[in-house]
Length: 67
Image (cartoon, rainbow, N blue to C red; front, side, top):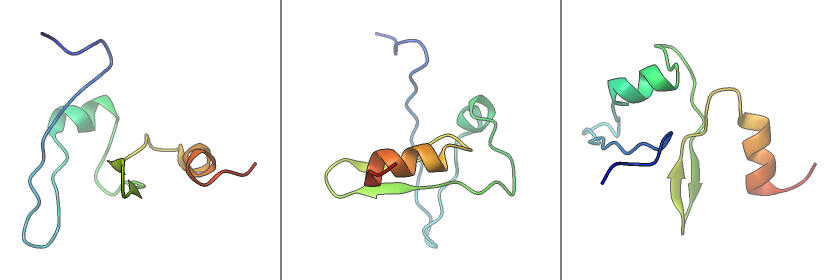
């Protein structure tokens, strides 16, 4: 059974310093380059999310509400 179009699943291992490596395919699909800053959102019940670059303001509104 394949994943629906546009949906992906990867795994990453957390190193001793708490670092993870973003899989190459994910970096290519989402145009993540060395030196980029990524926003990581956390929710006790829903887990972690890394939204697409440039989506900070939209994600902030969705997570914390407001206009």
